[in-house]
Length: 501
Image (cartoon, rainbow, N blue to C red):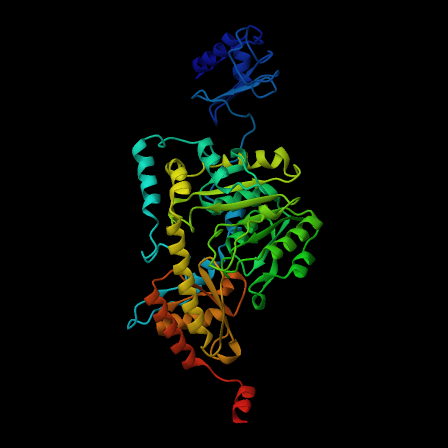
């Protein structure tokens, strides 16, 4: 062991002639720790030799105090002895503990046992591809094939996306009222990541954001996991789910850092008018609150309605608009989204731009193959494809609304876009059930029809229907819902008296 110590001592001496030379026997007597096989060498040097061969050291030696520590294997470690753990103690992080998807929490807790005599009809899944009746356009598929065959997009792209792909997205969405350049676009892994980055760049733990109620559950999932408080502003079903502007403004305080607007809406299927959006912008402007505009369903509006992007109406409110290919092009699994940075009066400035770039570097961004295909997808998809999709969704929505409007105890709200329809349950007429969760749970048990209880959207006593199923399935589902309600509906005593008169 003494021979090994001498070798280590001579090794350090070779790095610097300024090494204090002490008698080997003296050093050995005071520096050998038999328990952990470590050896201490005292040095008096400035941290580098004549050739600067040791990089990253400070003026007092590698660990700043002139003491070097060498194990038998030659690795450097601190002098302070650490106690050894006697047992495993691995705990999940606070972020993972605080991450909760309300939809999964509710659905996983439901007792879903379909009626074996009836085929299951799921009206709960917000994926337009599930039943195979809504394929994407052949031009879209061919664009992806061409990108693969080119072999140009198999490597890593910049974290914010290829310059050319960002330029394509900017040109597609740019308008005179809200011009865009490639530098204003961040490509993301789906719209969900776009929302994640937008919330993260604007908010710190302890801040709060305003989100719609009912609203997409991911907003809360992302915010709470980051230590951000969520405040729910009301939507008004009697006004086609317009925002209760007075209530929304009452929630704003000094820690409010973001206002989320989802238009067209999931889960409501609502589409806001130009006038209503201007009123929303007026509240944001008055209180100096930036807007995160979730516009993944942008342009998915039924004939007779007009979609208006938030940015095209804003003169002074900065907006991060989130979108993607998932819904309009019917390819949610391709995971291509984006953030459009609509700065106004340089309020975001370089800091927000740079913040988004840094956050995008946590992963390596959107799929490169889809980035290679995006120019053709955006520019070559025929208008007929969009028209067919919208016509189908509108027809199914009207069938559903018409059928359920005459079902006792139900109050559907006619949508104007997206792929959803909300239905109110008059719970007083269904005394067997305490809430919408029990109602929809029993609907599965008896009729094998699954609608998502709106408690998942923090809006009890409603349920959401996805209108992307084939038409014959929609008709059959509505008939089963009618049968279920007729079986369980109970008139209130007041209603009975009115009938007697």
